[in-house]
Length: 473
Image (cartoon, rainbow, N blue to C red; front, side, top):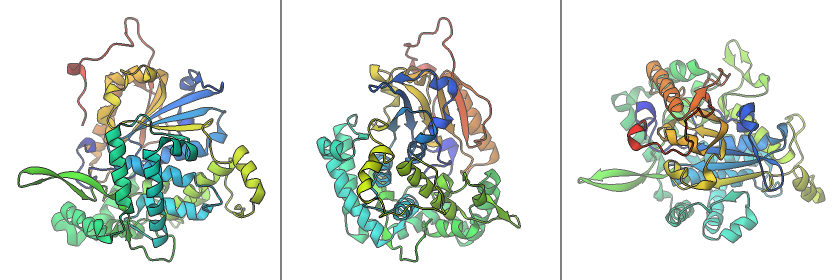
């Protein structure tokens, strides 16, 4: 479902977020963390529900910066409306958790951005995807094998038919036939359908959307050259002097099309062609030197900032300390100390993190299961799944829970009035679910709420009848 009536530039399948990556633990309100329950190891446990996080960016950033917050176990619960987004999150998490002796920091960072935001891949990246697709099939079909190799992920809640469909997705990723997903033609077709008579003037349309829409909302690091190149080809990140010519099959999804009056599933590219993948890691930075301007123009572009931020994230995930580009680690230096490093400061274990994948579209029924009632200390909604923000949400929210909702600032198809209307709608839906707005934050692309105290006469186990529910977009 499209957010707030967007045009078809948004697409029907979201492949990346439309807001920067967040450290959700840092975003959690202090009063929310006061109600944390203890895990089996006696450590406070923060339970986070992600409704449409899409690309695992919040999970990765939160995990990488755990060393900055008090010791806690973090349990993520991932809920999506399509299995393609779920499969990509498995890919990104597996890539981030690759042992350092198998993949160096720079290669890992470049591969992550390439798989996330490029329609075309290098041969080396395509080979990695092909290899991991076979591994993921074993993960999905053999739970013992998965627990032995990647225990921080939990697929136990998925239904059998969802596992079968995930296996089919991974089998498609392994298909060596270059004609199986003709992304160049599919991308151009989407552009022509979206622009119509403006297709021949697409350079001017691109300039307008970048300057008057994205720059106006703060994405000034995205320059015209890289933005138009992505708009025209679907290739956002070219960090190597190499040939990018292998279709990125992770961007394929199915959409119901009508043929002779009958709906049939058609595989194609049904994602975003207007905003781009730069928003997730490319418009903000902790290092102020990356955001410096020279004669009013940013000194670094969104690709450079994205690469720095992802490298920083992956470095912190492994070493539990801040990244210093002038003193990078020597990837082969650890030697015999690698095991000790991973045990003390290395990649997270099940005692630190667990990522649970939930069945598709299960949020309306989640409160019927006792283990989810009053469980989540923090809840995140993407703008494309706000229609799931219903009154029953408070039944799965812990006392004083924090609610973060992504706004539509970076959707060029929307007018200022529609962006404002969407923000007002989010506030209305949150209030109906028992959440109240909190003070403004410096994150203008999100709305922040907190679950209010139960009033006298409120029944926390009451199920809201359907006629009282607010319809989604």
